[in-house]
Image (cartoon, helix red, strand yellow):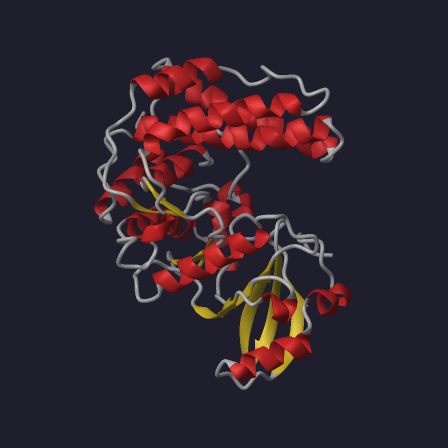
Length: 357
């Protein structure tokens, strides 16, 4: 069974290969489908590697029991990968996207199979043996997200993803209300996160001015990249479901708050990060800026916002677990992560810690 809960036996129930082949032939492909293998790495969507016309490709579709937003999310990912074509942002190339529900019953797409390792799952022999390779690859991660933030959303055909109003101005009210909504779950004990009010006030009082809108990943950390197994290079940024048009510096803040350097608040980066030898947060910020990223003069603010937002998101599983809608063990684990994230944001707000220290 893979992380997405799909085994070989259920793949054909979720993906009608005959119908898929027919659709591919109608859209300019030979449509010859060979071996099919479910992939680990996602709990929210079904990811399958298959042989198409003699080459390896990856199909991504919503989970077996799609959420109301699943098809819209898939359409967003299709649009993003299409928009990134021709840019210097490392990403899986889009082969074909289908929004016709008559084909597989859901929106899906096929993308190129990328030769890379996910740090959250494994480490290549070369990476395990060479600390300088791990160090260089991690710096490449910061440079890759800088290149993403430099993409013009309008030129990439993604301008419609921008929502009206101040992106930064909406963040604290939106996520404070989101946390408050958890009180609706039976037996959820509110006020279990530290420094929420302190951080919210500090973020509002110190909010930077809005900059020009840019493309942002929305969930950028080591587990959402594929690294070249032998070169200090990002092979692809993956999992684009949270991509939006906003302030790209929030992606850098997200990387900071999830980085495996003291203070560590989340176990992100798996065996790659555990092997050590990674650059400091300050080195990552420098690499980001040198690669053409936006001037990170308010990086502490963006890191605190990332901790505030991600902590509240993760706390949602704790709230659902209290109502019997999620595993209690998972809820407790993510609650600890959420406490760490808000605690780090609180240290920033009190002036007790800085990214560049």
